[in-house]
Image (spheres, rainbow, N blue to C red):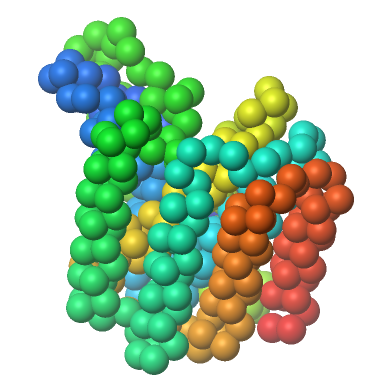
Length: 317
């Protein structure tokens, strides 16, 4: 049993290290070929920050454990709002003032509604569904590119510290890319194996483990970034990070995964958890469109709501 926990924890560590290392190596490579920073942000960094969730979901469906694949994304999107916004708000008051965040929240709501409709009406994600989601991702990236070019600003969901990879040597770039490409699939394999073993030993469905444990684990990079930003007085960054992460989780991870390996969706997610995800998205939209300042009180409400959600996952299983 201890091996399962070690496997899960080790998988999370490798996913975080692998994602960060791959991003920095890829950014360094792009800079060597004089790729504009905007393109780097919209493609390499955007996909790179979703790499841990993508590898976990792909590994899960290949292992015939779709509950982990969908639970990973749905649980991550719930944790992104309730924890990644809630906990930093306990540290520093935050306001959704970043340029373009409202536009991106609207895109996130559309993607969430479409994702829910696909799961609810079909009970599965087919290659057609995956193709539609991924096509929308491409359209979103083009939309971001046009808006960013016209306003001469970077996309709101990028953190400058995450892309600080200048001055790397050719050897350093190569080593980072190789290390990232090794760590990510290995981390995904350890995560899925550990989570599956824990689900069996606890006597709970893999979907619950995906929602509760894997979903939180793959949200740790966003949580760490947002806490650091809040500590430094830049809490508004958290909103852009969460919106971008949730959008990419749906369009990129679920889109690519279904495109490669179609899979069924657990009925529990259709009946309960996707609605919790929708409620979290709506709460985030209300905060952003209403320009509501997030202080300790609202932060405590969101964090408490997530704790209650976790409790119900296991208590009502």
